[in-house]
Length: 463
Ligand code: ADP
Image (cartoon, rainbow, N blue to C red; front, side, top):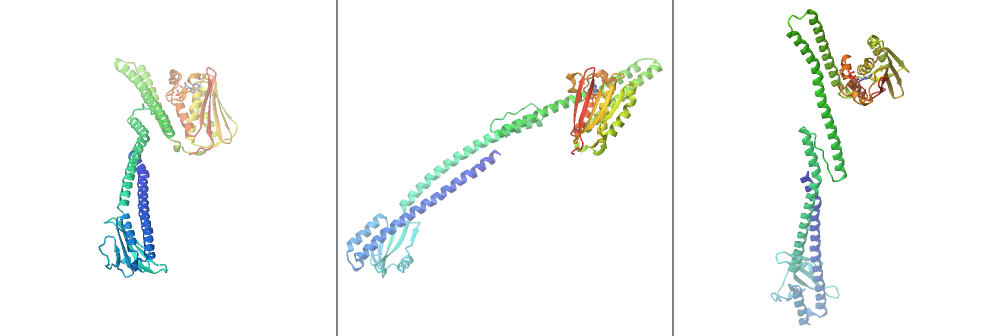
């Protein structure tokens, strides 16, 4: 990632830098050479004017014009050749081809009235220009061929190019350095997050990250720590759950072993004692069975709402059936069971699961009640939810335990719960079922007065 960032910055900043440099250099080169061409043209036009005015071709003022030609030669460190209309060289500043005839394509073109053309000779670093000598009637009377050295321009251009290359390279190095620093600073927090994630993958939930920098990074860091804390608490509750499960499952087995051992170690055990112990063993096995069944139910409920089997259910009928089933249990302790329905409620829900949830609540209301007490179940609804209240006249739950009763295996009074066959899983199962339905459950209770559980479930469950 860091490398990619540097590469992107380089491409986006350094490449345009060199493109700009190359364009600038090209412009400078063009400007230098065109200025030189203009100046040659101006000087040659002046010379051409003097040649006509002073009648050079008629053999007059030879020295004056020859002087001018030599001056031009020295200005441009080149060669100046003046040719008449017969292509005869009237003056060569090198004095090599005087009076000889020269014919070159550019000279012929110029004599035929084509505009002057420049030509650059890279090998000798010279420009050649042919300029027509025209009289006052516009007749071409000859031509001037100027070869001007451009070595000075080339030197200037090369030194400008060298300088600008140094500057551009300096800039490029600075840009790449800055990109590397920014890239490092940018990717470092991500590396730290990756390190922490790796630690979590290895099973350590201890490493919070504290990233400083730009706002987004701090948001990621906060979100990460929130996730970490959630994982930590999940891991804690998982470990607690596992140790609770082992403890709960071991208790009946330990009892069975004690009972069996005491039978085995005694000689001549009376049949009645055998029967009694065997009955106890059967009860412990039943208890183990109940715990395992509750655990299995809870594991099933841990899955998501997608596992709900939704049908349109008459909640009034559902509650009536629950109470009918539990009536004999309540009757044993002379507890009155009452159902109060304010209206008929039809809801889309999972009937089997909700029956289990409400059965747990009513069972608890009976279990943790006083002999001769009452349990009241009421049903009401508005346009969005239905509400089931299970109130009892029982022993109540002390304020400080009210938060905990929904935890798995939590029991306020272990002995009492065990006596009544409780596993401490009932309310955890109920709460899971309610949450699967996007519902809510609340408890209100006062010690020695009674308890009310209120469940709110949407009439239609979004799956
Ligand atoms: P259990 O199998 O022990 O009943 P639950 O999960 O159903 O487990 O309930 C957890 C604990 O909450 C119970 O052990 C009991 O202490 C308390 N509790 C639940 N319902 C009531 C109630 N209606 N009245 C008083 N205490 C209750």
